[in-house]
Image (cartoon, rainbow, N blue to C red; front, side, top):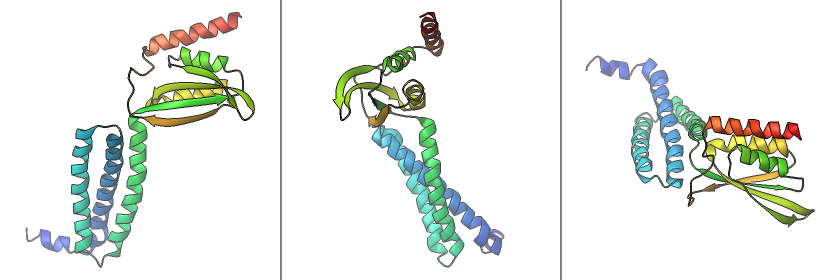
Length: 201
């Protein structure tokens, strides 16, 4: 115990190890805060509360060290850098988790037959209606997807109707299961069948 006290007051600890610990603590608590907000928006109460407990505990430890070392400028820099890095890490975690549902809305004044066909072939549920926009007649396409499938949907939109205008918005609840429902092997079979049909025309 006596050996630990001189080390805690040494230059190595004060100017390197302590700022590094504060930096890591801030990354942890800020990234956890981002995930907690995500769970709150999805209505996952227990996980949000559990993450919030550890988030504030880590924050208290970090701010406690700051208050004990008010003359250490490196600690301030580490605190701010940890906050910025934690925000970035939190966004990455959110993207990787891919939780939640999205409504994708596509508006196009071009023929949307291929786009609708391939969205259905990829086993996404599609609703489309005729509408009128500022430039005349348009086709509006709606599909509800899991967040992790958004990239695939956007790729299909850009491939088969690159000039289409599309928007996405978060959805908290749906009354039925969300597409795609079929297994990956079945989706591949459907896409191959569609391609063969197109080649045979």
